[in-house]
Length: 536
Image (cartoon, rainbow, N blue to C red; front, side):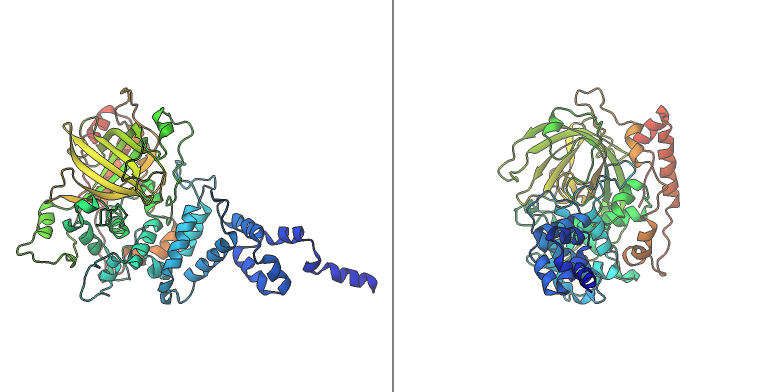
């Protein structure tokens, strides 16, 4: 009898030392840890306020953050709450939770760090458990519609606002939802499952409306108040327009699908992983942004007659607070390789964020699809620009494209995810003299390798080696598991849609790049001087 009583006592958790209990409970999933305090008073007391236990559970599920002084109990609580919220059967009724979702997603990405693995074959895009969790949380369409599709663009597409008026001041909910969509990274092109729910025409309306380009916005994706705060609805519109064109042009190389098809990939600071054997110059050691290397740029534009007619219609008396009509006239797409290096590092200016310096760069660019001479195939000093922080801590890129020794085009953009993110830079391009008649349009660029031109001048060229990271045109758009849930709702490929006949363009571009890989000097020269067009 005494032996039985002793065995019974040994089965009670409350008789175990605290160290052993900690070791047992540290292996729980975050949601299970949340259930534990509800079992009995003893476990409630043991778990509540136990920061060390919450920290260990957090680190088992998520990335180790740079900040070691987090409120670990709150982090675990919010992690579980976000997961339950996004998978709720009535998540569409919980749109008022947007501020919580916005704060938690931003915090998880701010605290993201590399797992030591890569998400692409080149090894330049770090994997993150935080980003992977967010991708799972927003895998189902109802969660995306509830929190990522609440901006003014989506309101227009859903015809929720009558009469249509642009808010005098940007609504916080619009901005929060738009930023979440930008961090999500995979452009959502439909707010429903029919042709009429396409978002692209309304995004085009915002991107090509010259009234959005003012001295107070620096003609970039900033608020119209001269504060340099990011206008995330502008960034969202750019992503939608570029994403639609990337899709319609069948740009299916892994260099695109790795970033434009996978949720939350590269949307956190430091997610670009530099090559360990890259050539490092003295100035690179002072550059916190990781500027030096080869970048792939995507630029879109509409025919100038369409652009002018849209912005300057006859008898135009449209009030500024009324958005211009939806725009769907077809665009041209250009792909440009930029190879840049650091030329100077200066202290931040009065209007800059003070935490990091201003980095100046120069380099060369070449179009890989068309002879857009004034922007891509110019002289060997074809690109220059700066990178700096804004006062709110965002990374602002300014570039100039040179033609015959003079700056012809300018761009202003924001690096999504922060310093050193693999997601890259998104913004506007426009005339360097701010021509009030345009043209202007959307642009994005992201780093594909660490190959940079030698500042001493003996490597001022773009060779076929610089194209190798972008020469896979056999990849599918996203993984098989992504396709199941994403294609219909977001890309709008419902039964009414006609198939877009761009096979000839895709095959021609693939042939050009395959020929480039053969390293035949004449073929390389032919391609670099623009003998392929991605048409409208």
